[in-house]
Length: 224
Length: 224
DNA sequence: AACAATTGTGACTTAGTAGTCACTTTTAAG
DNA sequence: CTTAAAAGTGACTACTAAGTCACAATTGTT
Figure 1 (tube, rainbow over the protein chains, first blue to last red):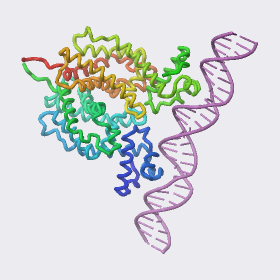
Figure 2: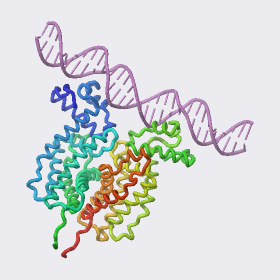
Figure 3: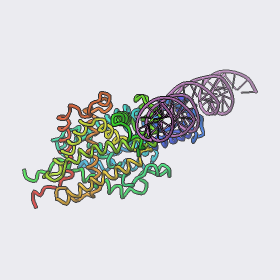
Figure 4: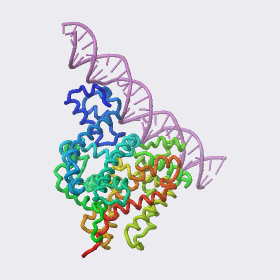
């Protein structure tokens, strides 16, 4: 946890520091991110960082927590109730993610990068825990849909949950793969990841959803 | 490319060196893998490495090429012809992967690790190229199945290809997630990744395939 | 046995890192 | 204005890395 000193900083400075580190950790995996470089950019002393945080990991965890909580506030606006089928709900979750991205592009980049840099030895235990939680949430979702008769019930729920969770990640990665989004570039230009590409993007996502839908949905009873 | 000197080495020594580095790069991402550590383990001098390879990247690329070519020889034994449906073919591809793993566990571990450590800045361009090729192969597969009327044709083929490609990766990752496979541990114990877990594993994979099957298959014509 | 070519060596250079701490500057309180 | 507390500093330690190179040892050839 950050030290008292950090929280006593003027909101202005606090933000400037947080952003600089979000930027660094968005561009490089944990072990390659350099505190020395960032303090140089910020024009502050190396020692100051250690007035604010215990160590590099403490700082990193703070960033994760921050970014996650901001994103969570966007996701929380979408409630399953009110959607007759799961997939329009899923789509709206994605749209909430887009709004988050537009309004907090650094946090969005940072989280985007995180999801693609699991498995570095020094961060693996942390990410393992995070994944566990996330997949659990997805498993609850899946169970609820099975309960409601919308999802099929012939596959273990943990497999469905994992696959659903990955659908989101894979979509993101594919967008990067085909060059529709370019984190490196958009960070450099200080633009949102999905800037000005919302239509193309939603079309893409719709295709992806159309593809995976039959995998999860309960089969129709054409003749029963 | 490795230097002449390396190829002139006795097969014995060549293997010993290759294996030691496969091991290191299987455990850590490129930038964290330490040549200094490996030469210490091997009991040879640091300078020797630079008699064999241009630099770290040259060595790394050699390892990729080696491991890939070994694996390819296993995959090549499975031909689409002779399988009435795509998914039994897909399953057999996976089984070929299992045989590869049982007989070349270091190479298998190494490639397993690769697929989960894309996106480090220093290796991104290389992996981008690899991915491009792999996805292209998957796209050809998908197109052939659409041609043959077995896959649906209402989704862009590149999306289907990417999703299919990821299905394989996600399955692997899930196996690791639930603890069924543990690369770190099995490298340490010098055992194949999938050692003694083939039955459980195949069951798991079958579930996964059953799940995604309806996403790709052309819909049945119950009433047409 | 003598010589040449190849292979092997490890101290060294250069460069980067996280983290520390005795000290200075700024801010707040009396 | 004076003093005490808080915040800021940057040279420094201790470490690890990739890559180099003058030299030593080994191998092959005449």
